[in-house]
Figure 1: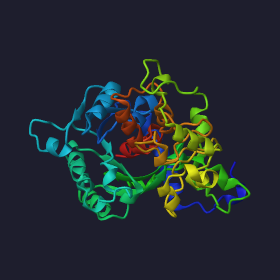
Figure 2: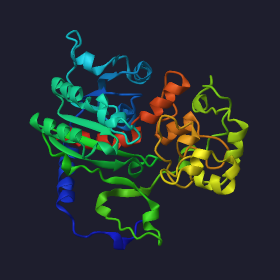
Figure 3: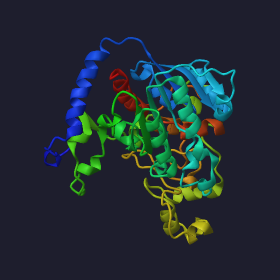
Figure 4: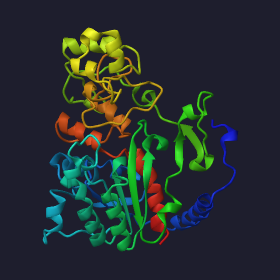
Length: 400
């Protein structure tokens, strides 16, 4: 556990306010049975909605959702009911025949590619402005709380400033910051920007969320980092790891979605070339990557990697058993795109393994072909992470 000498004994104002606040909310929640109405925009597969659902112990009812990808809409409807509207959100808000239902909370992540550092044309990307229709629906639905999730590089941009200032002009108090999914029970080191708006309470009392899990390396004798226990919930546990998530799975079979019950339906592989297999075998130990490939087998190393003197070392990397997975992106099945090789087996990770790293339960239904399902998995908000956000949103709604 965390060392006692790392505790900051000077209880800060936020922790005291939070304790009193949550005690009052708990008493009120015992009298509340009516579900909160939820709208999910840019919903994707519905990872955030799932975290807000009864499956994760929450009292939210999804009443409307939207996504521009028809496979995402099909996946959402298969899991939450037939109320996800497929189409461009800009067209939808201008269509007088479509009624936006009333809701207590609006959640969602305007497409993150507009802010991603991987997007070389991001400064001119029209997707940077999709927060405008998002807040329009917040206004039209009468929502008391909203949550925007995005890549961390959104923070500090002109769009971030515009989101906050517009929301404040609508009567919201706003908190924004960066959270790590691994700190909340997700077996993945996924940093996300979160913007919270609330009309009847200061979200800064509850955000940043107190952590339910901790990095065990911070308590090692090798670490110089100090930990403030005020940042953690009681009963804190170590981070979930790759081993926790996938060690029970057998070797994958085939290369296509299988007509079997979960988890094996999405546990399929690829058909790597003989050269790829040689490269996998040249870096047999967990944690190895393209740098080790160059050391161990320069004849197998692509020329572009030989010339690459800077940039990510996760490329063509193996995961570690005892650490969380790296951030899942939409092409996790391509090891040349990141650290997506199995810790031991000579292969990339499967769709089922990626879904587990995102904390999706095995019985969640994905619709579409394997490329579309990979996009849904990689773009999703991890449901376990969303469930911790839902804890705080419940408190904010009950504070009215």
